[in-house]
Length: 208
Image (cartoon, rainbow, N blue to C red; front, side):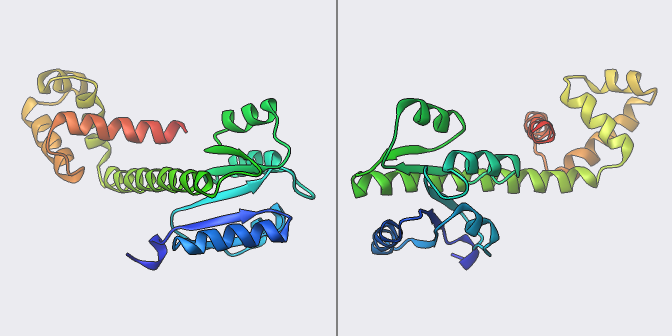
């Protein structure tokens, strides 16, 4: 495994004792971690790349955990968050979970509860990264298509047959077949069904 792929757990809590105990716990199961006393400190830091998640105290000086969750979302940083708090209430929990938090743990919580939530969060982040990487690769392939090939691809994935595509574009069926062959080759697609899935992923990513 490359160093960049090694997961990191970021911990933000203004209580040094809590930071230390979580870091010790993570170290005991071989997980790398970085700790911060405030959200601002986290934003200013140079953070390790690779799969990651955030263990975040709800009550922080300067910017609360819930405000920080919102700020990260607005900045397009899709890091999975596990909230920890000594003062949890139901509305707060609901708000955090609706905004995409993985878990909301009230102190004192069992160590295994936190570790389970962290593994779930890291897996979520791995999935997000894999999807992002796949879409990036599809975009690169799509960019190699000519304008006419993109038109052909768009019509093919909409369900049109070669004859219908030819009629739509005012081209011969033979020409459409050639363009379609280029599309399949450049997009590295083995079937129309696979090409449709690729187009859907590209469309979804564009509308996010």
